[in-house]
Length: 143
Image (cartoon, one colour):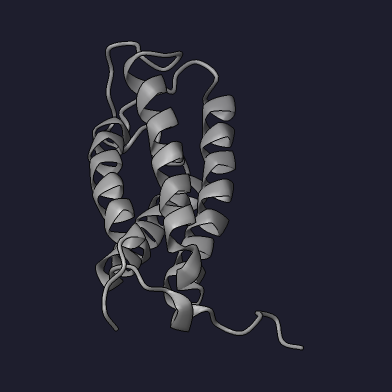
């Protein structure tokens, strides 16, 4: 038995555009994950323009923690989009849920303090695009 079970791509009947969109989402999850994990300030200062003068160590460690979650989630999205396409609708829904929670927090919740880093705007766009590609992934297309 190998590391991964056999592919499920043959039974996927949704749009291939949805699978390729999920590939893009995976890459766009891994890249910021690497930034959050590997940059000295996790991107908190140089990208998000957060004030790091108070509790820098805590802010940077929280960014690294987020990156440590983003990298494996992004890899999971890539594996699903390329090898287990029957799970594309489920993982698109997970991505929409993730971005929905992030957007809610950034605009209305605990993180809504008037300052909006790039991720707040990207989350809103990702929800809309994710919903479109989720709908396409649920439709049956001829092979």
